[in-house]
Amino acid sequence: MKSNPASALKFPATRLRRLRTDDFTRRLVREHTLNVNDLIQPVFVIEGQNKSETVDSMPGVERMTIDRLVVFAEQIAELGIPAIAIFPVIPLETKTPEATEAWNPEGLAQRAVRAVKARVPDLGVITDVALDPFTSHGQDGLLDEHGYVANDITLDALVRQARSHAEAGVDILAPSDMMDGRIAAIRQALEADQQPNVRIMAYSAKYASAFYGPFRDAVGSASNLGGGDKRTYQMDPGNAMEALREVGMDIAEGADMVMIKPGMPYLDIITRVREQFQMPTFAYQVSGEYAMLNAAFANGWLDRRQCVLESLLSFKRAGADGILTYFAQDVAGWLKEN
Ligand code: PBG
Image 1 (tube, rainbow, N blue to C red):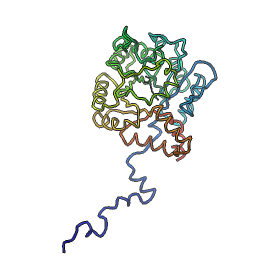
Image 2 (cartoon, helix red, strand yellow):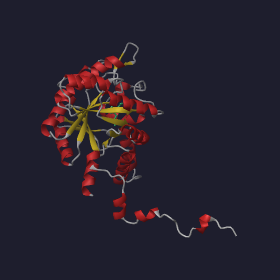
Image 3 (cartoon, helix red, strand yellow):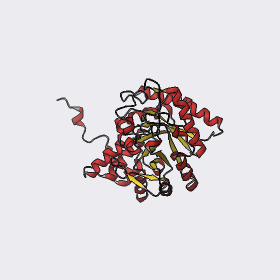
Image 4 (cartoon, rainbow, N blue to C red):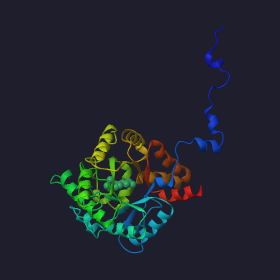
């Protein structure tokens, strides 16, 4: 009689479940954990005094005036979150085709940076470098006579914007515009201005994603953009190799940190970038991801705390060193309780 080797095995040779027996063992062998130092809190800032506004598609997120922003920044620092990312909401009447407000030394972003750095100097401040909040057409760059987003004239505008943020005291510039050559142009300008320590976190692999919808509502650029899209500069969601070329180019041009955006639908890109470049790699859990999760929480379909923590842990497992997330403040609070 021939014996079947599988059925001859009386016991499983390996019991992977052994290490899942109890909480202490699970904690001992856990490969990845989420820490408060992994978090970056994005914030929307508006003109005015002592005012906040809700954002319909982003429940729990508020646009706030600078006086409230500094109080919020203090709370964020108190929780141990290393940095905030500031996004200005620019009044319609200030938007122009040339986006000149972007480099106004007294602009909303520049004033917000100064106010936060004055009140909470140890909190890292990040600003977005891109023209979309300032253009009347809602594109991230300047248009040529055919309505195409023109790369090289946009670079000059981005450099002006970046210099004005550095002048205001920003710690980290985050170019999110996806023009070719912008990291080099900004880095050269910073060096020329004797700002060698301003860090650049490049939105290197930023996809033309439908998950940015709620953000465009929050900053009010959706109506300016109209039916337009950003596919001539943001990446095609079908591409992965190209993301590696984008990242490589930004690093060669002087980026200190790179970012992948959106987050959860692009975890494969995070892993590949981290493995290939071994650079500080960040992920942006974008507004649409936030909205999607919140819609399920509001319906009682998903558990808020557990799903938020699991979603952020998945970024760490994929290889991210940090995550921009609208949940940062809540998460920092939960991590403190644990
Ligand atoms: C602007 C910018 C966008 C986001 C960050 N910076 C929107 C866009 O490119 O249209 C999206 C952030 C989010 O969806 O949470 N260039």
